[in-house]
Amino acid sequence: MNRKLLVLLLTLGMISAVSFSADAGSKRDGRPDGGTLSYGEYGRPATLDPVTSNEMISLRLTELIFNGLVGINEKQEIVPELAKSWKISDRGRTYTFFLRKNVTWHQKEGAGEAKLFTAGDVVFTHKIMMHPRTITPLKVRYEFIASVTKIDDYTVKFTLKRPILNALAKFSFKIIPSHGPSNRHFLTREDPFAQSPIGTGPYILKNVTADREIILVANDNYFKGRPHIDKFVAKPFADQNIMTQALMFNAIDMIVLVNPRDIPEIQGDKRYVLQPYNALSYSFFGYNMRNPLLRDKRVRKAFTYAVNRKEMLASFFNRQGTIISGPFAPGSWAYNLAVKPFRFNPEKAMALLKEAGFTKGSDGIMAKGGKKLSLTLKVPIEKESEAVKRVVLAFKNYLKNIGVAIKVEFKEWQSWKEDVFLEHDFDIIFASWVFDDSADISSLFHSAEIGSWKNNFGGYSNPKVDSLIVESKLTLDHEKRRTINRKLHALLADEAPYTFLWTLTNYAAYHKKIRHVAIHPYKYFSFADDWFIPSGSQK
Image 1 (cartoon, rainbow, N blue to C red):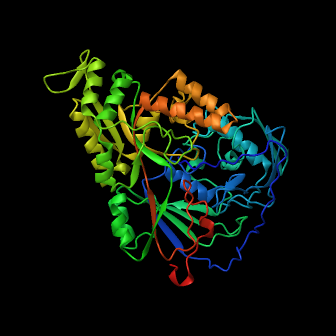
Image 2: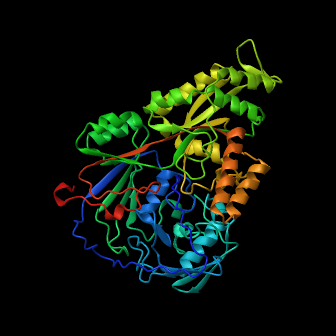
Image 3: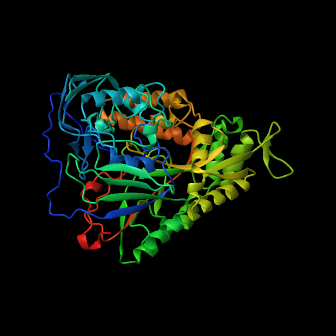
């Protein structure tokens, strides 16, 4: 998930957009077609469809395969995509989209004639996305939509429960085909469509190899014009060091997220471009409130006081980041600068544990009521980079100093996600969030989002937090919303459902043969159909 605020204040009257024209076929921009771009990913996606996915690896791929009704251009302006134009009426409660004609869904080999995209697909996407049995982080974000109506094959009307800020940008959610999923009512990760999706986007999923490489090929019939690069190959890596070496030895052409410790090595090689981008993400240690020992916020706050985040950021990430105090990244308008991160203070940590009723046993471990503060920290094996290993080991040692025993378990990626999001079998996790809406943290901390495959994996519940989240979503006054979110920030900082760590400066690295590269702040590949490789450098 990542957070780039698109504050587009719209007049609540009648608004129309003029469509841009782009015929299927060549882009006719003078740039050559051809070549293959292979890029490294830190881990593998669990799903490839845009509905059930809740991770950045999948989000980047779905950006290549699917389209929304609207998109966001490089200037962060809303532009037409599957909708060529729209109008807003009824004082911001009705959004009518006029769809492009002759847009076709990707065609699988031997599947017959390609099907046309229509308003029926838009209605279908919304229904399946909002079905109670579809597990998706999108549901909570689109609860403001009351109904979706097909006016005709190329006109669709959304009626909102209430006017909301920045509503138009939210219609960038990806549209899936009504003929795609095997179950037309709800979508699960077990549906074949989740692993073999079809979209309308610039690239078509060709296959997933035995080595879990994902092969995408150019869509010759893309409505914006055929993308220049013939093929994208996503290669998974379980170790960031190996991924960097793969780049240096020309085994891959691009890394979407460079290990900060590898920046000097790549920077010193003239073959590569090192490009910073602001993903507005943050890392954290998350706690499971189902464990009675962690339900007491004094314990969670003690853990945060015990951790020297400044030392870790300097030692493990070359100071390439900012320590944070709460659930919004510093680049967000919702971030409360008045709330300062807890300072490293092990004495304060010990005092909080004693206040919570813990005493140190003969083995040096804090205990209360016969239960020791001996906890399991689960980390996905794909996160087993050198930097992450050091962060996890440092966390373990910092907590040992205040009488807390941490057992680190590295788990295979899918097994880790099942433990965390399905079974909730953990005490602490180390993870990162990347946001696409800096003001909406409801899926992370609202009590309605507790459950299987939902993002409130720790089972955090606080009526005051629930109330502020709802109030923030209901207000149309931007300054009032800012005030509400600052209160929310301060409250969650004090509640410490996470030990909030830092937001890192992200860097992409790519071979200089790849030209006209523009990176979307959090979706990354939004503009990839315009990238190209000169004819002499193609392979």
